Length: 195
Image 1 (cartoon, rainbow, N blue to C red):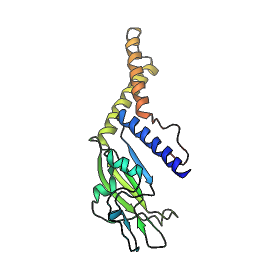
Image 2 (cartoon, rainbow, N blue to C red; image 1 turned 120 degrees about the horizontal axis):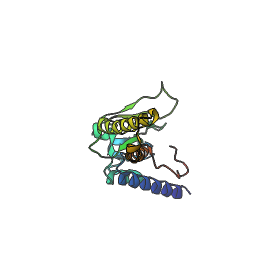
Image 3 (tube, rainbow, N blue to C red; image 1 turned 60 degrees about the vertical axis):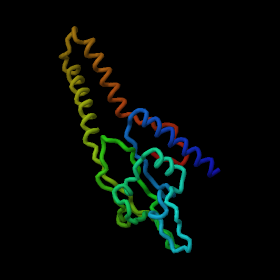
């Protein structure tokens, strides 16, 4: 059953990522993957047999790498060995990650792993990053400002009969643009995935 759930989750991720890419959405995939992108850098253990592989250890991480997603921590710290989880056998891994789609409209500024003891009782450290989204926000603000200006005209009664058809058409376009910006297309979430 576990394999079936993983396949279902993988299909869900692939479908959502493809739909988001088709709609030119920016994508962030994050969480506890229970797998690592590069065993040489992202795992340390006292075991006699250390992995010599630098390939991702799960299908989802292979998918993200193959499709050009950026491992935010590794992008900023290409050789740093930092871990987000450890067990009682002195094995440490970086299983908590943040991946972002490659896009010229946003810029990865920083990525880090922070201690979580003072914040939460989790046995995981906190993976975080800072992404600059100025151009995206400015475009959204322009659309929102345009929608607000039209709404104010309607509410104040300053729309005359001659321009009503043009204004209604413009309102419909702005409303559609705003709805598109706010939509997430995240439905039919498979069991085990929280949004």
